[in-house]
Image (tube, rainbow, N blue to C red):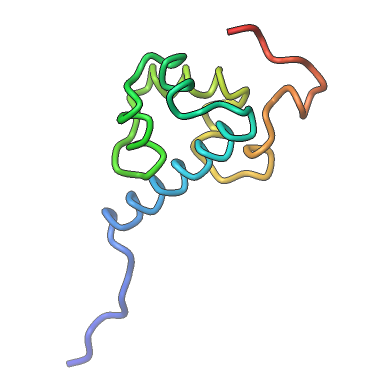
Length: 101
């Protein structure tokens, strides 16, 4: 009896998505010249929590995700999904300056 071809499990897919989210989060943070400590303070989470998001070990709750997107100048969708524009803050795409935080 032949075994079924290997398919990615739901858990594997979720882990991969969390890692990709973390990578986008780090890229956007660095493009704004923020340290992880600075962004964590602005969002209202610990440095360790932000580090866990960036390394794909934890996922932020929805209110935190919304604050991250606002501070990074992207939509929540752009932060969660791999899109071309996600690596470019909203203000650069529109020519606007970001709101003061």
